[in-house]
Image 1 (tube, helix red, strand yellow):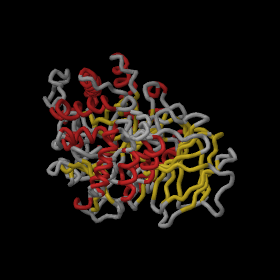
Image 2 (image 1 turned 120 degrees about the vertical axis):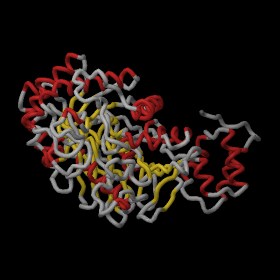
Image 3 (image 1 turned 135 degrees about the horizontal axis):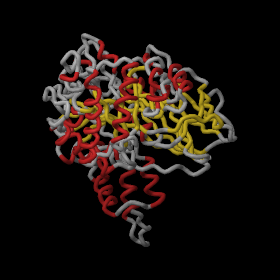
Image 4 (image 1 turned 120 degrees about the horizontal axis):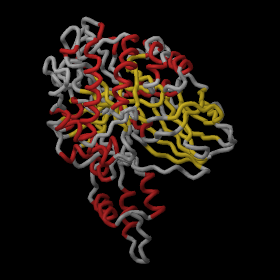
Length: 558
């Protein structure tokens, strides 16, 4: 809404602003007040609230809620969470690109900044002795598919422990244009470890015709309703893709959902039919699918001690199943429109695991991309992504799972409320992988409870949002804001361009919307502030100070 300047003598807006300005002890409002004064877009009802707040000396918490800023809470780690509930949740809002002579920074930091917006004039020289970020527009690579998270049983079940109003705030903060605009979501096909029980959609032994196939209560009452509500508020269409953890136990060689076991070869066709039935059932409920992965972490199914749902596939068996069964079955059902991704495991499987499939034209014709998880990133160099892309340039790479808390000493360490260290690790890996051809990043559980569950295998984990159903509130972790620095600004269809940093503690990744709009995400891992100069060869420089332990998204026009 745009409110015109009041006529002479009606100066209640200015009076409210002046009263509010005199209030001390409130940080982070300078830009807001300046904006209000400059364009007078203050609705009358807001002006009255501002006036009352200033007059009554409202608390910092109350004023944050009024303007939807972070309500911080400390839980003993190196940063804070932002608390949301039925009546309040901070969101960055809809941010327009600045005028051509300026650039905008959106910054989050260990010290508590959360999507802080600053607009600065461009300059004609770089800051002396600064960290220089070089952007090379002539070296373009992949286009982005998107960013998002997984709608697991655990996420959906935990969400529904909140009141309806708090649920709405959760959905808006993830999916709306006012929030961080998730557009790419993974959906487990039946149960995973992040469920309350192991199950499939047809646990009637020997039902090879799948007469008893049916979605579970988890889908009907929780996951699908969440998806439909997300679709209503989403700023862009949501791309859903399904991933199986395990076939029905009776289809496997070990007769179990977990541990070491493969799909019985006589079950290859029933299992392909199961995929079709899953897609049909979800789409009949209004949840249109965009893609599928063939198997979550297929090599885990050869581990006798693997505690949760899995199924073992050699690369050769996967190749043969795709070309003789799954691919033709999807095509016959009119589902070749779906994106089909293989691997769905860590970097250490590249490129050797996907080579037999992608080198076989009869299998490769049904495959669109390689799905990758992040769990071996610290041990396996990102060059394997480059190698895979060079071998199969017509197949994309997409990161489809990541989470923190999976490699801790005990379950009490799984959730670390307010950990910037974990957020920084995420940011570093996302930047690294985007600089090595990945076309997006899909987080694991969108939400978990305060223990990091529910999880039937006791594989407790961390999440960008932790839900406390008893208190009817949820906590947006630093992880959430790191994801938002990408998902909100690096939108589907933008193109990666080359960039580099002169400082080993500062990392960057750059994108173009067109020749006129540029997005750069920059991470400072150092303990000290870094003066930064962005040089894209245009003759203008973007000079600014990047706080210690901070991430910023830079937006500007040529």
